[in-house]
Length: 456
Image 1 (cartoon, rainbow, N blue to C red):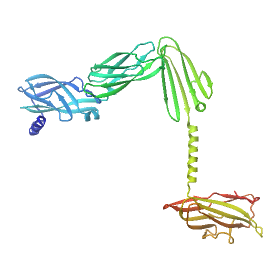
Image 2 (image 1 turned 180 degrees about the vertical axis):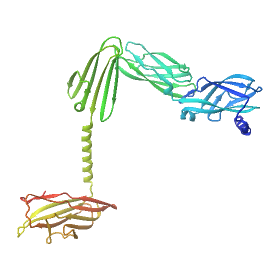
Image 3 (image 1 turned 90 degrees about the vertical axis):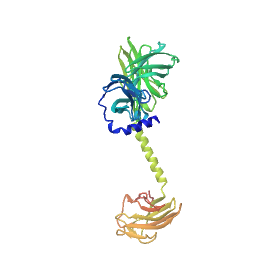
Image 4 (image 1 turned 120 degrees about the vertical axis):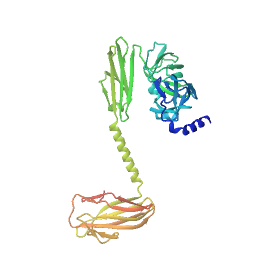
């Protein structure tokens, strides 16, 4: 009720709230950055110069930001320094970035003064970082350095550290741009841990219950002070890069080995050239060895290009899909041809069209085309329903065919020109309807060799 009453009072005096000539405010930034996932506020100091008489004032915001101190306070004449806490709500934190938010100072006698506060909202992973940790097998504890990179406060914050080497919970406080180093004992068995980079996860929780998470890297060194970094990426063209760096102060021999199976090694290129090769069964191991001085590195790149086998696989898939489509066809038309002997010695062939329905279909039309040199013999055979294109185009119509039903059409063609060698006939065409959709297919092509009486 009290807040509603204040709001109504503000509405009544709205015409006079643009400025208070007797009030001057100097804002001093004491930590204007807030973290999006957490509930930490921003801090300012207001140096208020009251040029008028002493009276009671209240500082508040109507744009989703809570401000402390809350309620009315006595402001004497002259300059007064007040510590201000500003906390944007969840929606403003989701917006992120720089936020210029209005606040108001309400005087019981003098009216309302308006001004703005500039805040910055950043995600936790950009505000707080865990510096890279180098850990050798001889060390019994890890030095974990946590850095606050922004102008913000983290007071009494619980941080739960988890890694393959240890788990530890600590309570820390960080001022703007401050860092702290924690000594964490190694509690896990490290005898079977291979040298290389490992992830350190830090779960952060504020006293108010807000939570966030950041990550760091623990570089587990080899005994001589040799760091190992392995990066792999890519699918069809897969590239693996292994880098070994001598971070110690004595010379050390670095060795790298990469194993490939019998298939992948056929498509692998290594750089630089390996020092030696070992073959065990179907596996091949490539070995590199190099003496490294302090701060020197051995970098090995192994690239396996699966483009060719991928294309072969894709082609096989396409063939399978085509075969699957062909076997699911609703109609098949098979064309056959055989030699016919004539009294006059003309060259003649008998053509058979076997039409078989695999599903119920309607309005079937079979069309076949005669070669340019051949003519239709109007005698034995199935008479076409229509002859077009100067007697070269024959067609038959079938109202419907049930699943598994077969029709056979035959006709004889002849030519007075003798043909020698291979004589090819074009494919027949068929159109039909199934479930209201129109389909078109072709038969196989056939040929006849003049010195035989067999087709195809």
